[in-house]
Amino acid sequence: MSGFALVTGGSGGIGEAVCRKFADDGYFVYVCYSSAKDKAERIAADIGGCAVGFDAADAGSIENALAGIGTVDLLVNNAGISEVDLFTAISPDKRRRIIDTNLTGMMNCTYFLLPGMIHRKSGCIINISSMWGQCGASCEVDYSASKAGIIGFTKALAKEVAPSGIRVNCIAPGFIMTEMNSRFSQEDLDLIREDIPLGIFGEPRHVADAASFLASPSAEYITGQVLGVNGGMVI
Image (cartoon, rainbow, N blue to C red):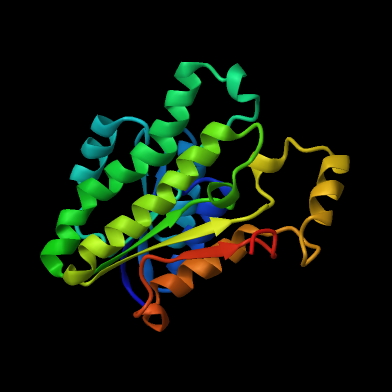
């Protein structure tokens, strides 16, 4: 494979693995970040890519950042944030930030890059959801809602742009060992592992490998699908 790939949330655990995997696959990778500029630039330097900064919750910030980018053959919408608390304890401002980053930001990134794909009659979009978007998580209601929205967006857009030769798919990771999950105690981790049929935690590379497959010619007849990478937690 070769071409230009853009990965939002590229400086995070899953995002970094995805960036490195696609660089290995032959893509020039735009490593997008919100605040971790130094890390994004290190990753970009390692893989021969380019770091691009913008606030995924701000449409103007996205538009300005992407205006200077040329052709993008592959878009991976990975940027996301979470807040663990009771639904009634999440303030409207925090709720808006979660939705704007995880769902609206993904839609805006796609909005600004999709016209080029339509013009070229080719392209691949991979959206990173979550198993909680499939079955819901107590104390992560807003996060679950945003991730469920990603699944609906994926299915609808896949139907709309298929005649233009563009494939749109979704990955729903399970419990992946990233910094986002470092808040859990060892006791909590042991309980979570008991709920995973394969008995092991996922790693960022598992999601990256799934993304690589969905972007490859081997998946040329796959669109509008949700690929669970969860060790069997959601079947």
